Length: 74
Image 1 (tube, rainbow, N blue to C red):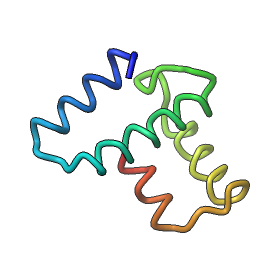
Image 2 (cartoon, rainbow, N blue to C red):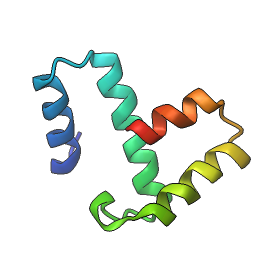
Image 3 (cartoon, helix red, strand yellow):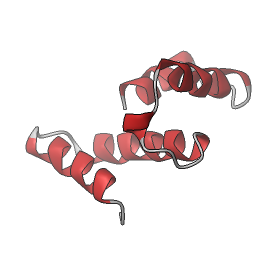
């Protein structure tokens, strides 16, 4: 990972003893969210952007509800 933000997220999760697979999954969804929002920093995004991303996952990508929940938690 090259992003200081994503490195900080991963390190924070490691300190809390998250499994490496969980960290990789969360980083994947965080990156997807950032790219969906045209590389806007997550701190600059609000509820509307989150709702748009989850709707995109459900309607365009046809992901399962559990996958949406994982993306939301990330």
